Length: 330
Image (cartoon, rainbow, N blue to C red):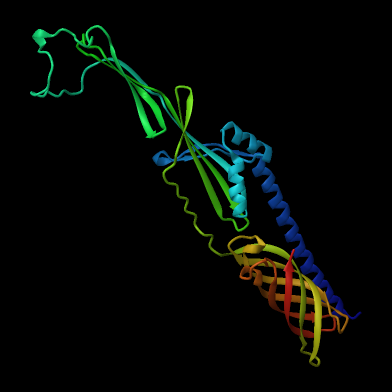
């Protein structure tokens, strides 16, 4: 083996080793970040304008099921609907608002209306307490009608006719909770399911939601540092010393990608692939350089991972080839 061949093999091996090292380091860092994130708890945070960031933590499937049961939430109904959308439950969020209630007695009237002149009734000088207002405190339960089948207790008003400040008022404490279940499909699209409860006087009322809307920004494509391993088959023409056809199966590592996310199904383009292959005609190892590849699976249904592109190669004899390629990413 002459010096030129040894140099090409050394350079090729060094490049592949560096790229593989970068790939391994990236995967290790990603796995460590995932472990740290899964073991961490992001506490609730108060922002401006009474905006709250929810407390966030990773839990197991069993913990998620247990949490839904503690909320009296029928998660099976949601899972069934998500299945029809080819999606799964991603998480559950609960926002709770509590009001303390109020109790007051000996309250003055906040306003009065004169008795209509044509109304019936006894004059003050002839008052006989026909309805017993001077003997008994009058009470009126306050309820908030939700629909024809449901009303939620609000409080109670009392009236003592014999006192100068005759009114009493009690507002029951309440706890409002909004439960939101987040689902996600394979493309990253999210789906939300909501439930609204009011708890007061020891009873929980499930209030029908009139309207619910979730708006999600579509991810924008961007350039990413995204090392990936490709298995490729390249075919083309050796240019020198004389034109001849050549097919070279090869393994490449690409460095950059362009797409909505780093996931393969969201990748449109892959850039700067470098690898090693074996020429099937000349039976010589070759250094492969692929400047760009396009993922046909980005636009073709039922295919996520099929790249086509152009590349150039140089074998150990210095023969240069221009080829097209098809590859899949691992």
